Image (cartoon, rainbow, N blue to C red; front, side, top):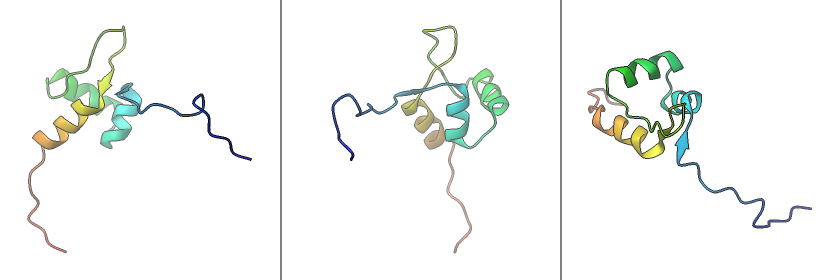
Length: 72
């Protein structure tokens, strides 16, 4: 029996920790750290640990994507 209550509904995640953000981008946590150190990613530092906004990860991908020349 599956009951849906307001307690079981999870809000969408707006911010990801370092490991989650790296997985979302498909890179290692060390690569994420390098991108952050280069200023290409801007995490929120309201806590002692960086929180990467989902919108910031999308911006990074959009700004650093280029069209591919290969065709299927």
